[in-house]
Picture (tube, rainbow, N blue to C red):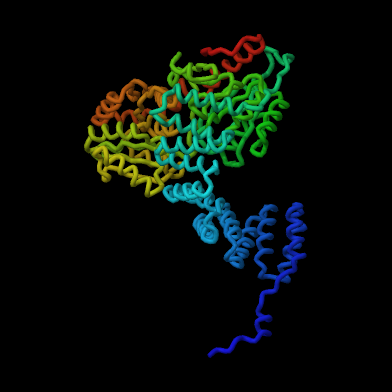
Length: 607
């Protein structure tokens, strides 16, 4: 029988602990935000008590405050090791690993926190976010649902669940999730934006219903806001106009590809361009775009009211929103009316719903006169063209149409999977059944569960999985090169391709689009008109779409000839020449300003 250890031995091996007064001092410094002093105190205490987990926990937090992220991560790792039953310590480590993009380790830390405390809402929430980042959509959905069970009033969880459901193609469930978030918090405008964005993808939602939902957003967003009052003294017909562009997408983003060529040739003698950039991302695109503005302001940290006041103080004459109901929008700023004339453009194919927004820019291809006027609170301004396209930096060559070597047609789609509606699958299924030798490439499919889901959708329509090829999201050079495996693209509806269409045309790959009855469904028409393809690749009915696909699938030589013409058309076509588009926009801005100076009401007009 073993003898018990002597008490003196036990005392020698016990971990030394700081006094309550010493730990209270750390907490006091933390609450007072005396960060440098707190770091020194914590480090001094750890010299005396190197295995005191709480002090390591405090040190990790203050190092994060001070921006010393690598040191903070190491301190949090130490505290989590010393405090294995402290859920918060594991959670803090998970956050640091997440920020360092060490996602697998972050998952492990969040899971440890949840094991200690199954009802730890923030740990469940952040774990779901990491699963989403790593394209483990099923697991992300599972954790959001678990989180909602723990706390049904967590509006952000409902909204994020909606995002995942939308991306997996379950639009009805996504809409229900957003509406639940709004039940919990009617002022949660991000959920409203997500809802409106999803409605634009759903063919079962009428343009009228989407419009009414946008008006409700406008009413909620404007509650408690008094628009700023603009002086009448500034109404000079001939002044150099100060034009603001507000966006969170001045980086390698779809909006940047369209806006950069236009900025480069804008008439700087008549217009002074001001940028309000609502993002912290900066890349080569950001640097190039920044060079075209007379004034550039980074505004991601400003409140909506602060941004509105800044724009007002900057003397902006015309403010252009480039986001609409998409990520990083500042629509609430526009509710304050910081400029006497406010315009929406590019970012979102639909109305903002704000009474303070005056105009929306369209072209005649995507928006024939009178077709959508009743679904915009803004007055529509018809330009000859609104699409320019920045040539990709990578010099990826156009190759021969692959059908010549394969002996069969390969269709493709590189649109977001959230655009793959049941109606799109029905239409594609008919095409693939009509052309039984054809195969199809689908891009942006990084999740195995999503791939199985897509295979199942095609299988329900009689298409075997061996006719399908899936590719994860790629870098721009690899994405462009993948077009070399595609003969022509089948577009989605009711939300058609925009940037994907322009990239395809640049690579010599035509796009077959179905001109749907909504504004979002006619974006492909604009893109194809740039390359003069609107007569051959724009279908007005599903039957015409199938017939066109079949006819082109039997015309390898026609595809080959077209393939080597499209890049030239995009580069030299009259409609997409940046200066031509800029001239149309400049004329429109001048007319808007002249009407304002003359005290005339906001009205639709055509250039």
